[in-house]
Image (tube, rainbow, N blue to C red):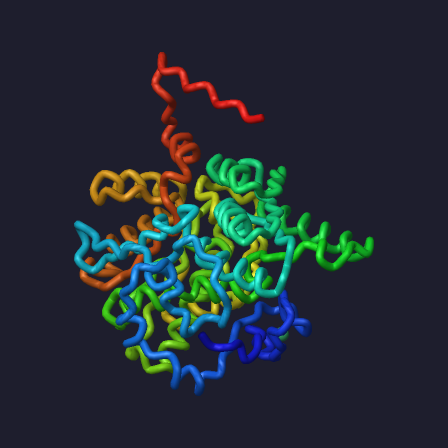
Length: 414
Ligand SMILES: [Zn+2]
């Protein structure tokens, strides 16, 4: 495992030390990337060693199989990563990366495994996160595993599973009448108050918001390593990625850059597609208007809860990647998203999350317009298990529990 050489600002390229925990660039508030000594990495990190790892430990089968390109720390792991790459039964070029197979049922496990690992390494005691739902669940789980307190803030209408898992993992759960942007404001205010009232440093919360600390991207980059390894160390033609905060898209692009520098993959990088819901589409709106950053999307409303991010912090990075890769951003309405959930459920045996179905809906649309061929090699991310959204999906379908079958009474807790 390599040591971190520095943290580099994604906007102004200023370098700072990773000796102490860092949030964003002190000069311009840009998101920070973890950088290693690439000459050293070229000597020590070999893809043959990764492929050869066959012992049954969680750290060799999951995302920590890429420990040679991750920070040198003892992992806080629940078995995240190395998710199935399912070959579509209908489209010869389509592969669905089933991130619902992660602990906590969502891709968020990767970023928060690494963020919590680093928090433990730094000796942090309190972590806080504003979340659309799944990041809160993942933080709660990894913080519990690490013996760290988790303070989670999410909209009161998150999928019920996200609320329940927060409680089960023993987190400090706060439901907010608003969106993730309101949750982020509250977390920021609380931390500012704690500092102003001279709260002891060990009691001050550390904010692990999307792209406001460097290690969630670093964990999510394993999706890029993994999809390339699962395709025999080759690139697909395109990657379809449901985009709320966009950490995975940014992480994968970083992975491609590193793998090319290490000589692990070559050829043309995939076109990156950011998929959103029409009810909250800041990235696709900015992309359509050729803007380098997004505008706050008003009145965000979609049952794809993870896409209700009205102004992603890393919008400038996401839009740059779409541009560089020759991809695009597409928003589908809730009707098309629901239709796609039912289509993939019935025809592929996959229960997509609404976010995942925003990607399949866009895929189907591009097949119809012949912008894509069924033989084009596409890796499409189902970012979470459909089972985490049974309440939202049932509501969208107007599906109710059949009459006469009373739900079991909930158990009482002391
Ligand atoms: Zn900067």
